[in-house]
Image (cartoon, rainbow, N blue to C red; front, side, top):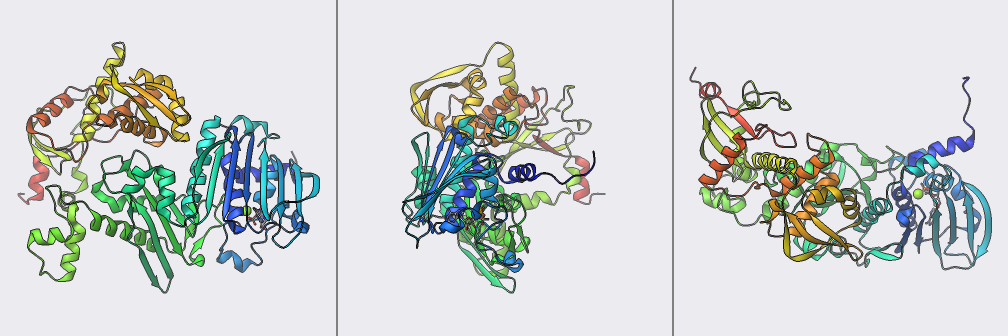
Length: 592
Ligand code: ADP
Ligand code: MG
């Protein structure tokens, strides 16, 4: 075929696809416009997960009557004037393509009135074409209704997930913006039901209570504010983090805002997890709501059409500011030492080194709980190999462990054992996960997993995202031993749980952890969906890091691990143990 310039209607649909991935992207752009317009109250209504209707109303500055049509032209914006403005963007929008893109793939109605004008305008567009315009009386502000998203892009419409799933994404997004702007009032309704309502009090903690419930919000710790300024401009970090005891099975509660813009950034999430260092159990993630404020010229927001990724000019500086702030907060707020590795000032006292010079004191404070890890790191990583001759983790051939003698427990996390050729460090959680996983598999093959009825059925509150996940996995959850029934609008009734969880102090929380794990956690090595459910149940049931085990419990665990078919890895593929051979030890001690 010869090269041709695409006709405008095709070009505009392609461009629209970049901005509008799913209903939540529409809501995102409309909320950003409302915020840029200085709105104090932002109401979001959706029907059928947004596929039928998404309506965002604001009390912002409105659009002057003679500019309303222009707002829907591609690359039309009131937020940028020159190329230079691109270097220090102070608004959420700036590309001038959201309204054009949304209008191109929906049936859209806007009614708006600018603050200084007597009459407003109502405009109707179908597939980007204006089909109707009329003057209208209304209070100052703007309302945009987007109906039948992708009505003219059947391929896209087909790919919309269930209303519950799409509504879950929208709920998450509105919650993020409410967290970013505690001084604005947000409300979200789905099919007429109120899902979120914030007061606009200006206090982040109030929004957290709305978004996560009073139990969780009450446990969050305000971040030690970290402000630093130098020749490269200022960085300010604020927000809330969870104590190490409050964790989640995935990263979806690690939320970042840069200059009031919600962004995704894996390295920032990594910086936060690093700051918790060894305080988190394996595979668990903190809750963190972190606001980063910096000179707009220090961050490039023009990276992607959805504007949800940014590039920092000096990323290292930003990450370390975040890390310092989280670390400092954790050190100060850490609960009293639980019988091991005192921290902070306690560490100084315990070590009798209060009189040391400040630099050495600081080094020790930083070391804190990490000292054992530091000690272990002295062993070159090359020696941290799985058992000799058994490197192929996924090997179906039966792996074998030598006979191990339990010596003791380190940091309530690792079991030390002696074998015929040196020392073995066993991760108690990973090992137990493997044992439980094989037991569940065997149970399933033998005709079903045991289930226990709860004495009192428990009501479990689930968010929309969680609800969608439960629906998705309903049959498998049942096969794994859960008995659940719908109960009211955003709740389930938990009637029975798998035998394996029988001892769990809080079955509802255990259930939610498993759902979260399924929604966004790691995929087990065996990728099938039933394997995912089993792995999630095992992860939740396994002994945790931080749990003291008696000598006989450790011996029992090691014996059970020996009996499994793949004792060297947990169901997610991580090693259950590290071997330090006699030779390796000899070399470390320079014994020749
Ligand atoms: P951008 O936000 O990148 O400028 P949009 O396509 O989202 O591009 O919007 C185009 C223009 O329409 C904006 O620059 C703004 O002037 C106007 N506009 C859109 N939504 C609103 C609103 N809710 N209130 C006031 N003005 C709005
Ligand atoms: Mg915009």
